[in-house]
Length: 72
Image 1 (cartoon, one colour):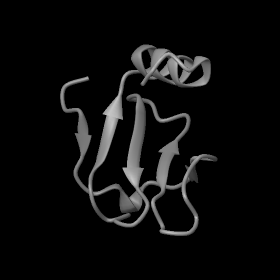
Image 2: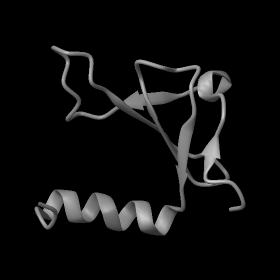
Image 3: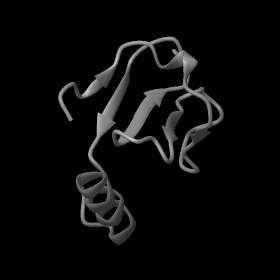
Image 4: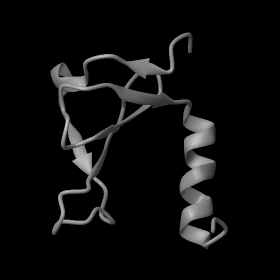
């Protein structure tokens, strides 16, 4: 993975919001599954903005740590 960002994520289809996103204030994190270069993550309030691109292994470790309560 050469560039860890996607400058304009609006053309990418299939985003899903995190089940932990706050619906009251609009704070939503979205991820895109099955992308060939990794796991894109963006702020739903700015869909035309950039998305961060994470490698699958580290993303999986991050999600596991969240689920297990290992992060402060």
